[in-house]
Image 1 (tube, rainbow, N blue to C red):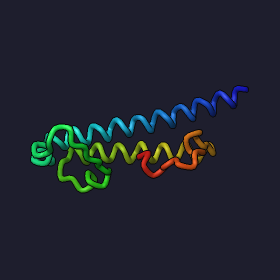
Image 2 (cartoon, helix red, strand yellow):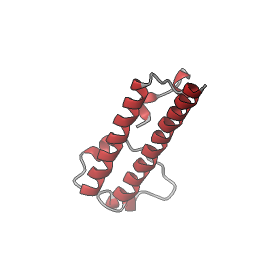
Image 3 (cartoon, rainbow, N blue to C red):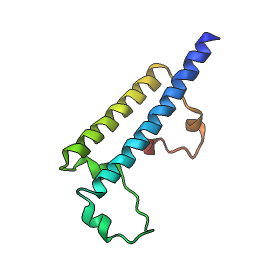
Length: 104
């Protein structure tokens, strides 16, 4: 019984890491829109939607952006280590349409 609770808590920790990276990614966008991407941000009409990938930020010259990218990478490494060490498959991963590559 205790082992099940332990593994359930690890699964919850993994889900939390996913949410942490989503939050950091949103911060990357927010900071960039007031920094390196300010001209772009100012030219985009209100309501227009754009998608960003982490690749856009990996080559940023902004030290703050690079620190956030590094943090995201560390969170992803920790996620992978915990998942692999404990042979955990999240319920979300069992879904055929699950896009694991876009978690981080």
